[in-house]
Image 1 (cartoon, rainbow, N blue to C red):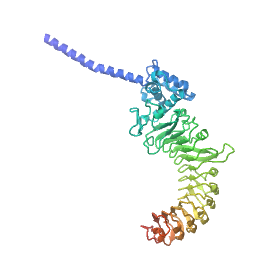
Image 2: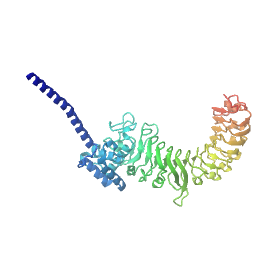
Image 3: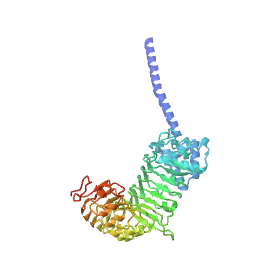
Image 4: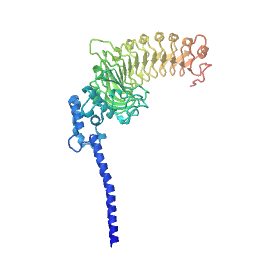
Length: 501
């Protein structure tokens, strides 16, 4: 009997021990979880807010602009219903970081930095969380202080150092942010998996001069994010996923803006309203966007424009060429490739007397080249392939374009002969006249194009011979032709192949 009693007692002790082994770790784990949740700012218990959190929240509500105050207050009220800190909006994640993690600006609960500096830090933290900073390819997360392998000497974002030391940023001598800028190929934000919608808090960076982030996955519009900036000089966000109307309000608000590049953001729509009297804007690129209109306005008595480069290629601008272009008298490069424009090349093209590049690849034009083209004496590139032109190549026009380096008239319906006046274009490097209806013999004038490297004449009705001067660089030629393409009816001793159809 005693032996049996001992066995029962042993069994009970074993069961109690097993039970304790299971329950105690669970309690510990839950306790740790609760502690972590509170540290990260999960206030779902409805109790009093931690002192650090309340201090940071009060500071922001006292110093943020009214619209950002309201947004943060609403989000903070809703925070108690949130279950996971990672699901908080970027403003709350930045608030929690400022309260619990940022030992640089908030030691011992007292903000050691001035108001503007702290707001700048908050705005950058909001940008970081809004754009998936923990998953950036270069300098992601907060695990290391410096980006030794990718960007030596620069700190990771949210590191406990001055934000001016964070990667990709440049500040002035007063530690005020002026640049978020990464050039192509330097291993930074270019192709850095920056994904998300630009937050309104970008407007806190009112002294920002350069925002240059290309080839990422930024979404949303730019107008709200940069609504308060007045110092922008460079705004580049090509090859992202931006949407919304073209941010026309940025132009009048930023009189020092020189470069606006939104190339290949198909979701950017609406019309461009260029200010004729904008004192600084020299480069606009909206190629590959959904822009469908173009307007030039003048807000003062001045009629001068400093714009030099305008790329409207692959947009939805249709109809005849916008007459507003005629006002851009200092324009040097105009590109309308693959844009569904129609009609003729208007005579007012002559008013663009400083034009060096005119490119209208695959336009839907008709008619002949206007004689007013001869006024464009600074043209270096005239690129009109598959553009719908017909008629002859006017010799009086060609004779005036003595600065031409590339002439591409491929795939039109030009007739007549290659004009002897082509010899005046002595700087030509590329001459492409293929796939037209040209007739006659190969002109001797081509021998005088001593810089020629590419000569494409196939797909016409030309006859004659490619001279030995062209083939072998005899006499006064300075360059060897790299490409010669002709039909088989043309004699060419140096051609590797010819076109027979």
